[in-house]
Image 1 (tube, rainbow, N blue to C red):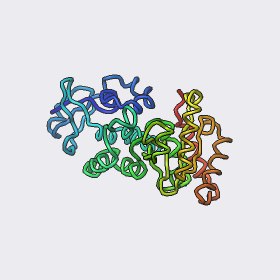
Image 2 (image 1 turned 120 degrees about the vertical axis):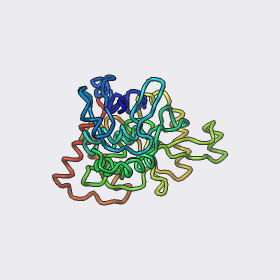
Image 3 (image 1 turned 180 degrees about the vertical axis):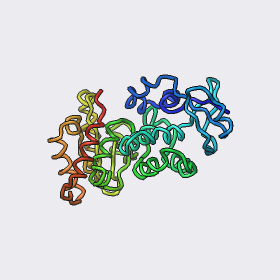
Image 4 (image 1 turned 90 degrees about the vertical axis):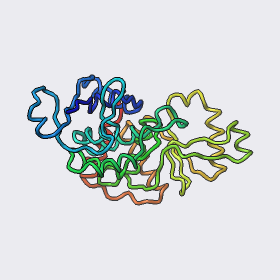
Length: 280
């Protein structure tokens, strides 16, 4: 029998910055005490401790032995938490653990492909169905929680509260031509959220942009010269429903997609995404 640190306590250990920030309250409540005992049914019958028990066969590399103890892998943590989260929270979790941990030049801890492969192998485990559904929409390489929500509002299907615009990706790399590179003093940059084939770029304008006006202007001009249509996204657009509604109408027009007649299901799903926006 093996006892491992699992669920939010394991997420705390793996220290995935954006997931830590978004799920901070859940991680704080869990502390380091979420443990699960793994073993055969016979071993589980002899366990008398109050920890969770699991006699389910696990996929390979589900439990990671470290100098500090045994921990659920990132893939297993995703599956465990999917069992208690709704579909939107599960997509957010997937996006955040597949995000850049330290900026666009770092390597994500895990990829959607690895999560999918693991989940497909985890037959019979709680959370598997929810995880498989969510992984249809999980994307790699986000660099902020706000980028994730831009994708939820634009990229999810109508039934989940999005516009259903396909093809968006996080932090698309743009290689500059010599004139743009000279003006920008760099040979490349990354677009927060981009539809590369349609040349439509979304840039989240956080507070720090107040101090980078000149650089942002040069960046926008470079994007324009390369044929991109730039759409800025501000905090107020995401957080104020009236502004969000106008923004989504503009997005639908820009992508030449028809915003379908809003059903009660769409409105409820859109409201749920809005409720889940980080409030800190």
